[in-house]
Length: 210
Image (cartoon, rainbow, N blue to C red; front, side, top):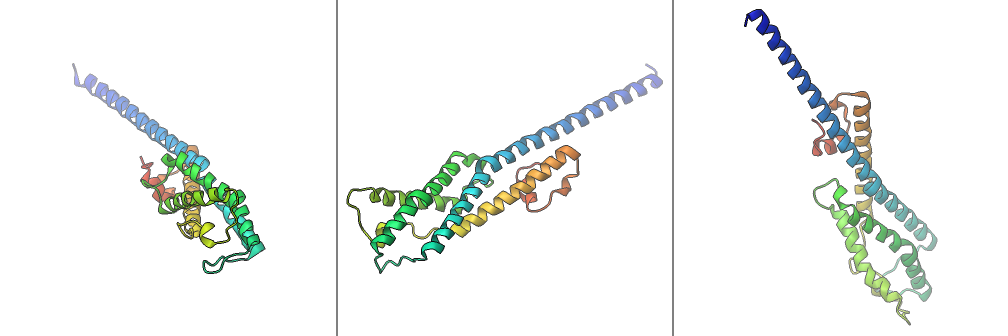
């Protein structure tokens, strides 16, 4: 076969293979970005979004409760029967239902966590709620009328709600940045380096830079 025939043929094959490879890699990157966007959407809609909203609702309810009653329970001083009844009412109808809902959200959607392990603040929330369950159950017993501190407060002690709030806010905001960046990449094809903080760390961890 003559050289003037072979060379164009080889060039044609190389161009075709190169074009196919480029198309394949582009399609692969697009698919992986879409898959990751789906996961981020689920993280926001099924885990961090609900948890953040529930946490904010809980914090707002606590602030309203504290502003209305302004009573601090001290272990060494028994509360009045009225205050103890008020505490049980709010815990039973407001705080514990929200707490249980948060725990259920964590347990049901733990596969959507950002980290490889459960964050300490989430573990503490689950422990806090679990330790309150026997306290709340005892309140339902016939004749219960105790005003003692230990009969109204979890053995787990005070819950670090600010630690949880910060974790949920940071996680939610980071995922929103990441979501926006992924949408922008898919719609406008902007360079990968455009991902701003705080979403960059999460994106690197998820290996979307392909």
